[in-house]
Length: 335
Image 1: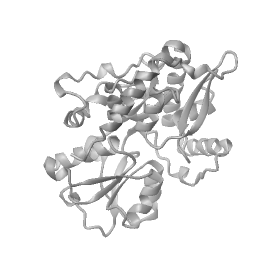
Image 2: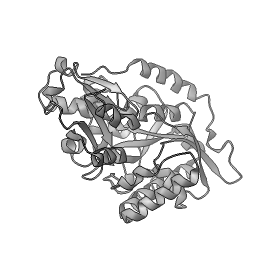
Image 3: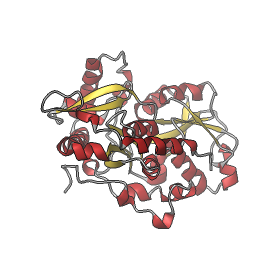
């Protein structure tokens, strides 16, 4: 398997241990009757909580943007250590964080893959790479190590018969998602992971070919969750419920609203927050991507990664209990 970042987990455990000494600060600077949730955003994109706030679903709960995240693992680590109040990451990264001792729990799925919205792995059209075995000795650009793309790549290589020693020869290169397309085209990497509107822009431009995708491997699935700290939920139970339910409603709004209206809403939000961003790629939005109703979490969202988590030494396959890592109790769309 490609090298797994283990030192980071030790750091996370130490930071997480310190969180118990911190108060639930979500309402620290809130006006009377309000709770403010600090969060990290994503450049040129609209997060589900941002959409929920714009649609009025958050009520007296307010969002405070503190900057943009560089990856899912970094985002949930920030939430775990009290730098923010919620964060989202790939399911496997959530499990790793909690196993490392972080006092957080997954509360709602916030991204997923379907026939329209998925993560693909692309090469230049004239690339000699056509099979999993062709990846031996090659480089693959991913947004971060130890998360969604690495789990998918490992699964793809394993299913196609590569041995552990052969998989170690496939080099994963961390790259900002906004830089991946250019890196592929310039030959700086052999393969690049692309998803969402970045993928759609790259495909529309031409010159790239899909090698495989996570949807081809697994079909439709929920890919990652937002987490909340235990102390935040304990101190702000109603605000936590309002937040999760608002995100659930935003998921269903995206699912049931005509594409043109969704893109128009996203464009309005991005333009209105004045962060010197581009709305050019928003036109490529296709679907919310989350298969589950209202982002409800299931054991399957976790067990789909049991083999990968076990091979990485994160969990023991015969003792993995998904229910320990998530709750649907805050989701008002729970049946």
